[in-house]
Image: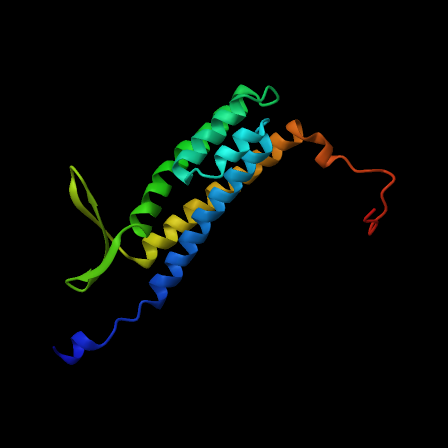
Length: 171
């Protein structure tokens, strides 16, 4: 073993970028889960959301939204576009998170094995992780905007000020 081989590689920048990407993916899951919880009309539906992974959660939230008469076909299409746009980004996130990481010929890689397709690898590169984090953050923002508009229709009481309430009055 040479000195070059025994010196650990500094991966701080990759770890930070990976953390930002994971944070944005978790944020997307959180805002979708919140939308589903708020739009669901039955406790059993809300309970079912709790055990769903992000990949199953997003289409379920769309299905829940489709049951709400207050949501227009255009708004449902918009939510469907968010879900469709999110799918490849969440798949990329899964490749990184569920992959085995290692260094091959000086390159850091995440490797996954698929039963019929064998191994697939992805570089662990800061630029790729930062791009994915930014795309996920844009999806978070779109989901928040969509949810805000939907909740104004489905839960208007949340947005109505109580004229008798004074600032700082917690009663």
